[in-house]
Length: 106
Image (cartoon, rainbow, N blue to C red; front, side, top):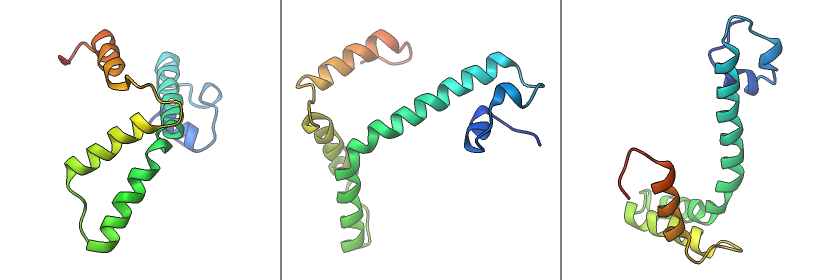
């Protein structure tokens, strides 16, 4: 069987280092790192459940999605009101983005 990415291995419960010998080991390790980041991100992003519930309710009640700005407001509130939230979340986020991102001005 041919796998297209390390995510394929992960989703099928395979160990990439024991499976496809034709894929560069560095690429597999790099992709697995991204898979691990995705898994951790999914766990963390459950903080947005209130926003998901808000969107689902509006959609069920009206058959339409809420205004995007209202959704963005809810996401911002999720970050600011999360248990143990950093009161300067967005100030610190902008600082981090400036430090680690070379593509955009913040």
